[in-house]
Image (cartoon, rainbow, N blue to C red):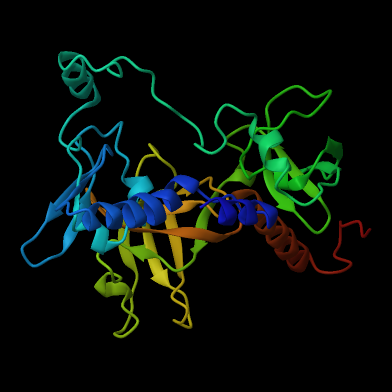
Length: 321
């Protein structure tokens, strides 16, 4: 979990360690250990539901408490482990769980929820991760719109797409729109809803399907077509309608996800796919499509080119530069 996380940051990606921990630790090593001790099931406190069928397959379903649903973090859990898993909290709301804990006089009944990455703890993330990365070089902060140098950062790998970053001497809220590791440049935009942060298209790597195999529409052994579904790009984010299609050529099985509403997500993060309340699986983002800002610039340049062509060289009433 930790080594891929650090390696991802070093190459400019931002992996989700919670997804990896669930896949490789809690629902692999922990489950295997519990079963080896003679347990029939492994129960965890995740807010999710599981539907076991007599045929042997198990479906991962969203929790009753939509605000606490954790299926995003479980989107890569192997089917073999899910078949032996129970989620007792999936049918309860958080307030009901706290009431049960209080009735049982558990000291955690009123405990604040823990947030953040477990292996970082209370340490400042930038200070923690710097000691595991190659030496970082300062570089320019460049405005994505004007190309103007706004300031200097202390290492491109210490930032992630969409992260707010202070720009000395400037007001407003500035965010990382793009990173260039080759030139140690961070491209910045002002405002959390800036078009440079948003895209309609993502390329994702080989998916982890909850059922153990891709849905029929994406089965490369047949004639694959687009899968209409919904997706979450982060925990507690709303599910957004999208279509997923296999990238040609099929091997390795990578996919293109196209969203009805533009999304803001970093390379390396997980996209969780859903069919209603059923989580189908998840995959890591390997590339972002053109941003709305880039598309706007391209459309403007194309319109200008069409205007110049329609006027023609030396047309009456036109000044030629």
